[in-house]
Length: 498
Image (tube, rainbow, N blue to C red):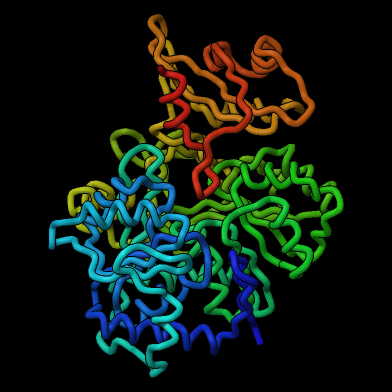
């Protein structure tokens, strides 16, 4: 029988689907006794583990709403989220006990007062109860919500928050069903073993493969958090067949001490998303580990599976996110919202049944995101070629204008990654008295590599127009990375603008 493996502080758990369903029923009964009903929110602030699935499926059985909180957030940021989301229950892990204690002490407004605190391990905080003890003491009777409809909200997933306060995207049961259909068509079989390394407060952790895998009856492995060496070990030991990550994670795995001896032959394919996968990295995995790569693209508010690039196109269409998935209408528009043709750069807009139902308690943002024709505006600058393959040029917010010319950091980063000494890089725009803004490269070198600022700028100058070449380079030991594995350019800008 298919099992779920949860890598955690305690010894690994291996659960059958029957056991997983029993846990969900027990927690659903506990929540109902605690006064949680259809439409109520249950928050979880915890690293990855089976408790996320307990919470999600218990909420689904009740018609309640699962709300996983970004554990990188400061407790005052979480307080602002709670003012909007008003959860009745908070589940938290020991790592975040101090923040929860501060949060609990600050909440005085009954409109968003959390009624019940459940701690996963450790001593918890004053007034909290132990999650596993409460779950096991609860009834295992089946729970269902007879009035549940496809448009009802299953979960709130918070947008990346790399540029400001995150919004809560409303993920409906309809959206989950359509994403599962697309994922099964493209990727999943009944016999797959999937290793999840994304945080489960992120759409990549809960919805990209985890939910489709569970619906299809496969094995899902949950790592408490991403560790490159442990990831390689688990792929080999558990004979993982599907793996997904963002480029920074794939880079970090190649630097792990067990990279050379790791046996990855069980993998049917790897999926990369979040940013273009550098060609040298694709080549390294292909040559050294015989890995077949799929490039994908998804969003918190849409999909999350929106585009897919087949493995056979990984090199031929390097940098492409592929073609739209089934029932996804993708277009490129100019500033006047007019449709553009092939090779014209504009904003990527999307329409289809895998779109969310907007943002929780934020009707103005919900309305602004969708135009009169029903297209969701992504904020991504993109283009498509004559064969219908799409390319993300950059985020609209990352684009900067230097001397009147649009500069796309992704294009510069792609060039920098061609240098053999580069492990990781990010390009940002910084204020400049003469040009308005100029590019600045932040780079991390591979171990035992040397490279000067002048050498790197010369390398870029041989490949790009002069206005695109960064005016400065900062060498760093590491780049700030979000829990989802994305580079936090906002933090780089704040640090270098001081």
